Length: 94
Image (cartoon, rainbow, N blue to C red; front, side, top):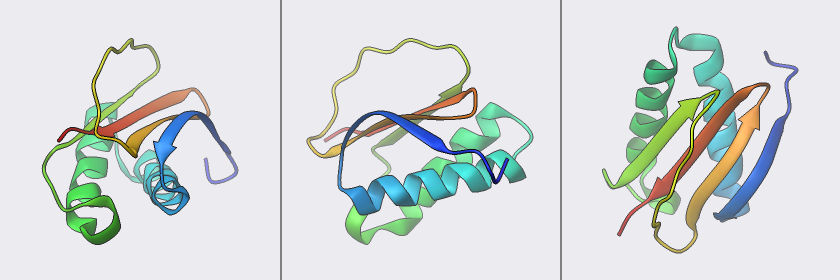
């Protein structure tokens, strides 16, 4: 999976934060056995990172191959991308 490229569908996020989440998603794809485990891992990393991405539990993560969404997010805290056939939807609420 390390050769897979991320395809960003929508981003309202600082480019450094986008890079952080894509790198963490690639780690999750290699290390986690299920989509739920990937989502849990990504949320833990977002909360742990603090600083630029905010060390808040208000991060929400959806990982999967088939899902729909309708959400409200904090300005500059929304990212939707794919790595291979796996979609990642990441946002923060106020």
